[in-house]
Length: 471
Image 1 (spheres, rainbow, N blue to C red):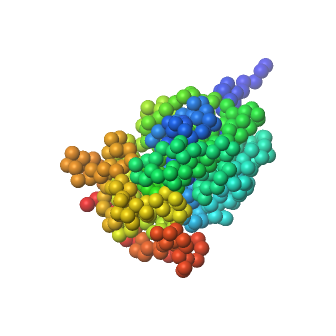
Image 2 (cartoon, rainbow, N blue to C red; image 1 turned 60 degrees about the vertical axis):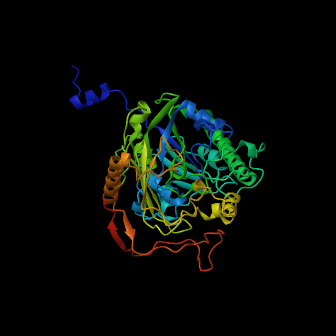
Image 3 (tube, one colour; image 1 turned 30 degrees about the horizontal axis):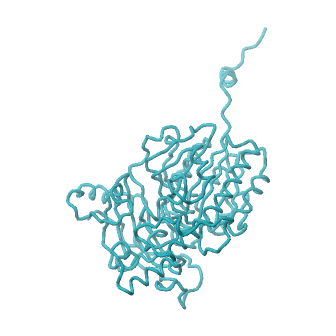
């Protein structure tokens, strides 16, 4: 007589086997604007591999960073927390050891985790990966394919591939066929002489070099026959390193290229116009791996958008600007149509990062300023005092040049965004420090100040004022 199986065991045998968790590869550019690639409509920048990735996956048109500053943005992405929550909100501040990165729960679940290229997160954070390989050629990407080839073949993997392209300084020879100054699409907040066009063309060259290495990664996944089961994400850590872009909370600073491909699960050719924040990536990756994000991950899982790009997972995204070469403190909240910018240190101008201050593009702005020939869109880097608040209708004014905060037609929207920003500040404990961090560079030349003593570290104890409240 055959003995009956216990009910629980019989049910387990009858159920289909659980799907294997996907591999995840995140490729992150260093200082690349969303619009500077073919996938987002640029007519001249040569990015065939990023364009292919977008055709094969989902392109997000309203994806935003929490901060347009290198290390704080990367720390935010990997922890799923806003920069001021990580303890690493200023440039070069290392990520504290108690901050949980997405790699840690993945490792506990059996993933092999590795990073290659630019690190910029400090020594303690390395312990949360199985392997961290820094550097790798002028673009930071020569170790990407060897890392994939050397991975253990019996585990799912999470790999963070961080370029140093298209970060300054720019040198000739980044690609065999350089972009021409005539290829440049000059935004209205930059002047349009040959020097600025040449500067943009050199930046495009480094984007093209990054794209070639992205293609090598995609080809390697195909060679290993794991492409179908691998989620590939491409994004940038901040906007282009030009005046009024990198470090700002304008879209030119915080809007990022954001493409997700997963052939086994995600339909090709998707375009999503819903809001997504870079703080959402970590909890989404954990969800795709079948894990529940812990309480430290404050972002939202955007996986529903991979199945239906018309769904909404967010009403607002938030961004912050803190010390990056120069002192600053600015906050922003954006809906799909409007953005509110709040300037806490109104006496400080919107000086771009020091490498951009040393650029030909900034030199041209200085020349025009000294000749009293700056048009209103070109004055942003020098204007002060800043307005307490700025409101933009980004659909009608994508470059955010016309502040409509005083327009009574938008009073209701202004109030809604004020309330959202105040609520976010309270929820995330965002408070204004009582003491400012001194500038590290001269705002006119970009040269280090005489009393600068290398990368600045957080003080052991920090005092704050109360969080921002609705006027």
